[in-house]
Length: 368
Image (cartoon, rainbow, N blue to C red; front, side):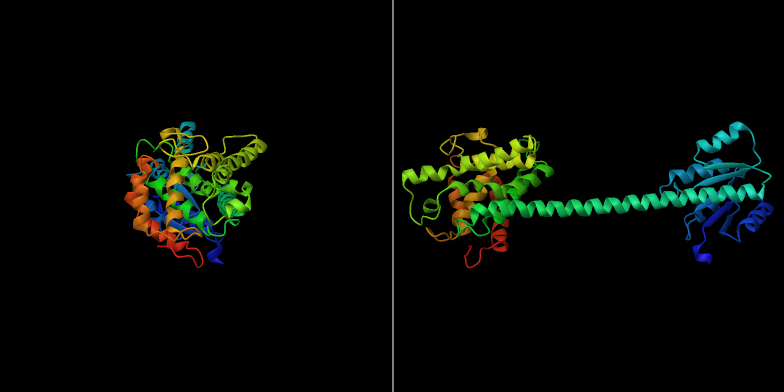
């Protein structure tokens, strides 16, 4: 059937040569003809696109070498193999043909059996190249799909691990999902600031987003009578509660030790956040009493995200605050509890925070 045949474009300024080549090829191939280089360059873009071009060298206005050069400069035509057919038989002529991108060089007068054999060879090579290209694209697609699946599985695993701690505190609900979005938005807002742009790259913001749910993983080590206590903690109980930052760091450090590396960005940020998100800008936080920029940026972001969500969420020991009241409290804490730069970022994007709270609202828990 004609539709399944390869298409060959024959380019020659001599009518007799066009008739000869058309007669040799038409029983096996679909043939298109052009008697001029400019015509050939137009026809090569018309459907059906040629699978192979037979190209004369000596033509008026634009010779075959020039036509081939233009074909190879165009991304749409660069992969079409070109066989030169010419009476120019000098070695330097043949060298020039290959230098401009020709796939083969056949001297005139044409021997039909040789021409047909070389045409078949070039078409077979072209078909193999197309097959390999398609296979590579297919394999690349499979790899991308698998990578997305693994990333989704990784995120689900992270949330499941972090939820082991959160489910022991039944008031926190979807706190993990909200805070990871808050952290990512704050980081994105700060990423244009030259002071933070080197660290807050798009890739690192993704790692921050993924690691944020691990901030309270250390709660698994806090006794239930403290973690679930509805009233105010005693000093002794609070000291035990504060140990969740240490427990969190230790469990992540043990994973790093098992893997034999501290270069993993996910674990790096998870460890920073778990250990330092309770530090305060003025040095009054815990567990180390770090101050200012000695506190890792990841932990400073989480501190704002964590407190905002705690304020606007209902707890056994307090009602949910309004967004406005929560913002007022956080702004008052700027420079003491919180990094002023992170608070500034929150002020600029604060309208999006209630939307996230609503999107990931806890069941039967009111957010304002």
